[in-house]
Image (cartoon, rainbow, N blue to C red; front, side, top):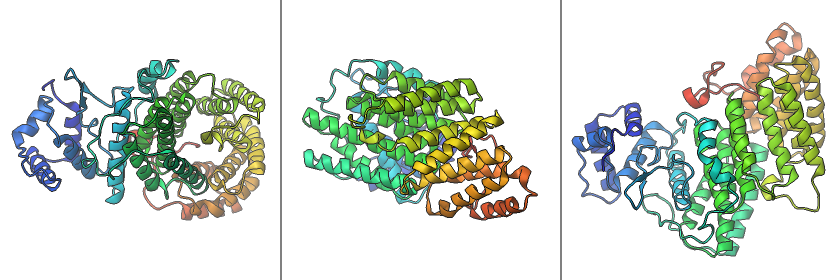
Length: 499
């Protein structure tokens, strides 16, 4: 089948730096190693893939995905190469053509996690490509997520049977209620570890668990079990995305958030789908793209239904407020935070929170308010006082096991104090953050520390602050410093924004 030049493959081919002959030889060698010695790709065939859009037969797309993943040091899927699954009418179906069909969600999940694990095994760094703009995601997914009707084949469909050997994972089998309960408990363990020590140390374990769940979804289960399994997949995908974001793998993180939204929707849990997209919005604010964040928050809220509890809606509002603060929209931010406080106060204790919302407590509410006001203080210095007020409340309420959140609170407080011309108090809180920051694998804490370091510049002649600057310089990881204003999703350099 031909359809014009395959620009996705052409772009990646250019990045890889191979000649067409080299790629043909690599495909043949890799295919033989995977048990396909009869494959005979040549230079002219590679040219047709690129220039005429010819789609190679299996197992070539999977072989190519594996080769490009290893060469570029980031996850490259079949869809990234421009080779989607072929529908009944012969039309090529791409994972980028959001939203995915339910059968395709499990396939994308399994393939993407398999490639991610391959990078982990080989010690490669998954830098990723450019992030998708928030508007591009919301435009494709709005009607699908906001539609009150669930998919006609929800819960009871028989997902597409995956090529297990080609995806390099265990041989999946149908599971029962006890196995799913064990998986649900494992999510809680991973979530608690992430909150305490950051995403770096357990990311591989979460991705591996998600890969196994993708295999389980390749089989028909009773509807109730299938729903719970989709819920486990959504929770693990959110964690995989958050941990990836925490260590700076931004496009990888975004892909997991989109996978999580699909999995939650297939499981009939639209509030969970909205929360997954709100994570993508937080990521966008972190990268200095508040307009994209606001696009994603509109979608997250539109997808919510009557089951979305007030506390969840309050959490969504705090993220929207942070994006507004990043744009300097103080009046809008204050209105949004006021709505969040009212929603949180209206929440009834007799209605249990979903497990994925149990981390958002009163300390988190104040922590996000401190973050929003501290961000606004870059535009309105008088907002620093409110940032200090909320940061104190967050620290008073914060549980000891939430170490990463405490570091963020300390840095929010220190930054607000620097903006408010109180270097002595800022120095005290900054040093509290430094006590434990090296015990945490979160790169985002280092970003916040760099952002606070910028604020110390005008106090560089102050004795204690000068000592603090030297201590920060010795604490930060070695390596090239990011250039201000660069977007990591485009050039690979992290923009130093408040998290």
